[in-house]
Image 1 (cartoon, helix red, strand yellow):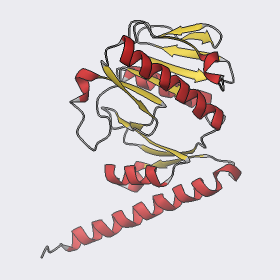
Image 2: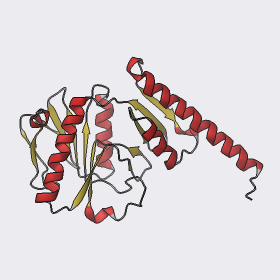
Image 3: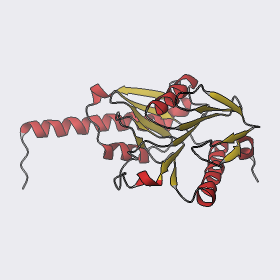
Image 4: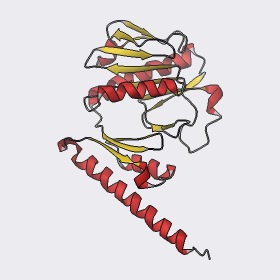
Length: 231
């Protein structure tokens, strides 16, 4: 029989209370987010204490309408993000094209993931990009039943009406600083994709023009306009 000290019991009770508080906030945002003025809630980690990876995974799985991320070790960010049919269809179409490219033209030299996969960066931040690409040579470095713990080579963020543009741009810059080689911010409201690369100015490509994977996804080409086709 395991015997806990008073300090261990106090810590366990405090942790349970913290997790219950976070769950309450997340549940409230999930159920009432559409009617709430503030659809983006930021909680200071210093007030929450340490939240385990297992708790983070459970919280995400229990709240499918939320994007749940952390910023460094300072903030837990809960954002109401309903999956609009058009956004999901476009992302699904883009993933199909990327899967085909990876299988036919890339010799399966990498693996693509959707937004259900969380990336844990070197600084401790946890993010849920809409599309993540990991090189095959680095897949073996990811522990089983874990977050993606290696830096992605390529990422896509699809901007929605519930996003804040400045925050989205800051997130893209964060990805590049963490070592991502190529990142796309797709903004339907602008009908443009913003391309982020290390040591290069941000480039905007209209949806009607060909977007390439450059030397990161060599041979991949797509017109974002085509992703909106329902056929």
